[in-house]
Amino acid sequence: MLNLILFGPPGSGKGTQAEKLIDKYGILHISTGDLFRYEMGNNTPLGLKAKEYMSKGELVPDEVTIGMLKNKVNANPDASGIIFDGFPRTIPQAEALDAFLAEKGTEVTALIALDVPDEELVTRLLKRGRTSGRADDNDEAIIRNRIAVYKSETAQVFGHYNAAGKSRLIPGVGTIEEIFSRLTEAIDQAC
Image (cartoon, rainbow, N blue to C red):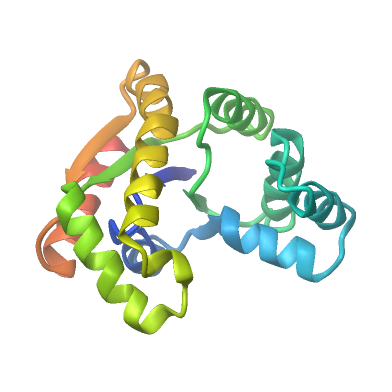
């Protein structure tokens, strides 16, 4: 089973590349943002819990996020693999993911991080902000803060999987096809 963690700061091209990877490898895409929208939009028990925390301006606890992730995986028992997009972001989340996958008799195949210089990320997000309708894509200070948060949160997770020989850093600058080629080469080497 091919289980990938796709990492990259906001604006690194994760969404674009995830779609191409899904097509190539025929695997399930799990985005934490999509999970939250689905669970909250359908007022599931986990969605209602998430809303409760978010309405107070609090972070949603890991057990709620992990519960949503488990629901999605369990709802797709025939998946030949999974791309985890935006998860895990912390060591406890990585450990919970590892334990859950072990229960399923599988493990993370590779963590692949798209490496893009900060200035390029800012340029990409400001450009995206002109059409995305997302307020957080239109403010350079917010963009730079999102990049800083990404770096502080994910560096430890990269290290967690790197210690197991599973982390790969891929240059995320170039054409979509050039980046995709680098990704598939890294994935094929990890398998």
